[in-house]
Every structure is written in structure tokens, then in C-alpha cells.
Length: 418
Image (tube, rainbow, N blue to C red; front, top):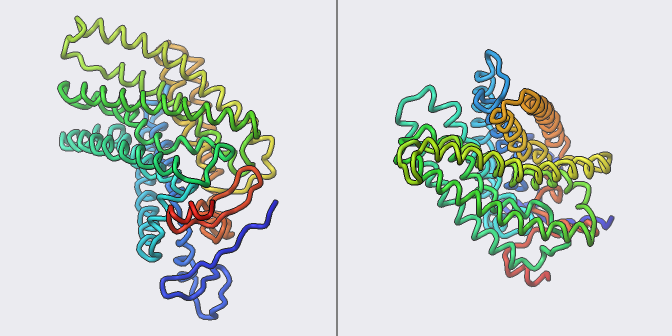
């Protein structure tokens, strides 16, 4: 493996930083930690993203078999997610304020920019959690708040999806041989508008629920179609160059997400279709037809997520001793949340205890996986394996020879490097 390129990282006052080795003789532990935040990338939002997904999975509504206290456990996880999201947002805000130019570099860098979507995915988990944990115990004001947040999220994530893919397609560094499922992340947040609509449309007045469902359906459709186009590139990459590098393979689970969350959204939106309009005749008949179509279509699409899931499991097991912790480990959790909830939703629709039991077993596995990944996350922070020069997503890694390239200052610098 080629030796990683070193770069001269400097603080705002121009003094060299060598975080973790106190060469100044007087630098405090707090100062060292704050200096390390220069490498606090967008990928750190994968932690609240995965935690919020786990909270969604633990809600009583999304489980086939429940027990007393399950909703309380889910509420605690949801509150913990809010705390984590706030801390991550504070840390990345500090980075952008302290180290000038890092915001622009972060949204144009060919690797780090892909993870910008994890911040909005974290917001999607929070909005969805409002419907599961907030609205049932709060006043009607939260119903209106949910609706307003949905439409703001819808508009913002669409603009992000367009803008990010523009920079992705003009980047001279990122080529087809470097393709991983992370290329799907820019469209993923907009796609989750369907999941948000499926979770909260039933709480809305009938005249507000249908526009939300239609917008969610549109977003889910665009996200799934763009994902299919990305899958074509992904297949070509694997056929010609093989699987991604070992440390990129946890991201293979991202490919599980689009078909899984699409299946989940279709079932949820069909169940929440309002009995009010009679657009297609009697609404009771329309809803019955929608539920049948949604169930059959969801099973049809979900099979693709099952295939990607099995492929990702085998690819990761094959190189398990070569994988070191990176923030993409949280891909072991979030995409599989949609995969698991869909299993449970189909089990409920078909009144199958066996399918629901399988979903419950997957739930337990995801909880254990979250604990495992979080433990390694803390260990990596303490051991300077992340938030450290050359070890985060602000470096571009060539997937073929694993060569590192320091983050460029501007898009123009990208073209010069090419």
C-alpha cells in the first residue's frame, strides 16, 4: 500500500499542529481535543443518523411483538439521539468557524461531500421520531410543526440532491473505479421524504395528509430511480475492479437502504391514505386496493435489499481482519433499519408470526451491532484513529491502490491536481 501523503495542517493563528503529541509543552488536553476537530467531518452525523434509526425501529408501532416499556425505551433512545445530534452540530460548527475555508472544502471534496447527506438523514430521523414519540403525547401544535418541518425538509433536500450531484459529476478525482454505494447518499435524504410522510400522514388533517403522501411518493420514486442508475455504475465497478477496499466495505450496506425504505414507505403511505376525497370512487375500496398493491410491490422491491444485504455481509466477513474503524461503520445499522421495519410491516399485513419474529430477531441484532459500533467509535476517538490528520473523510482515497490525496482547497484545485 502506498504511503499516505502528509499535509501541513495549521491552526487559525498559523502555528503547526501535531495533535496527540504535545510538542508545545504547554498545550492542554482540551486544546488538543479542540484542535482535532479540524478533521471533524460530515460523516460524524452517521452516529445520530443510526441512533435515530434505532429509535424509529424501537417504537411500538414498528414492532410486531411488543412488551411493556418498549415505547419508553424507544423514547430514551430518541432523546439520546437529540443530544448526540446537538453535540455533533456544535462540533462541526466549531470546525467551520475555527478553521476558515473548511466549509467550502467539505461540500466540494469528492469524499467528504458525499457524507453531507448524513446530516439531513439525521434530521429525517428526528422528524420521523416526532410522529412516533412526540405527537401522541403533545398538543395539536406539534401536528402543525411536523407538517411545516416536512415541507421545509422536502425543499432543502431536493436542492441538496441537485447541488451535490453537480459537484460529484464535475469532480476530476472521483471516477467509476472508485464508485461505492456512498454515491447514493446525496439522493438518500430526499428519498426519505416518503418515509417521513408514511410515519406522520395519519396524524394530519385529511386535506393535508394527501399532499404530504403525494410529495412523499414523488420523492421516494425519484430516490429509488436514481439509486437504480447508481446500482448500474456500482455493478460495473465490481465486475471490472472487484469489491471496494476493505475499509470501504461497511458502506456496501448503503445499497440496502433505497429498496428497503421504498418498501417501507409504500406500505406506510397506503395505510395512511385519507378516507376523505373519493377521487377514485369509494375511498374504502381505494385504500384496500392501495394496500394490496403496496404489499405486493414492497415484497417485490424488498428482495433487492435482501440480495444487497447478503452480498454486503459476505464481503465484510471476507475482510473482517483488515477493517479498521471509520464512521461508515454506522452503515451496518441505518440502512438495515428500513430493511427490518419492512419485514415487520409485511408480517403484520400478512398476519404472519414467523415473519414478524424474524423482524424481531433482526431488531435484537441491530441493537447489539449499534452497541458494538458505538464502543469501537469511542475507542477510535480515544486512540486517535479518527479526528486525526489523514484518517478521516477529508482525505480522498483511491479505491484501486488506496492512495490518499489531501483535501483540495477549491474545485479549481481539483482540476489542477487532475
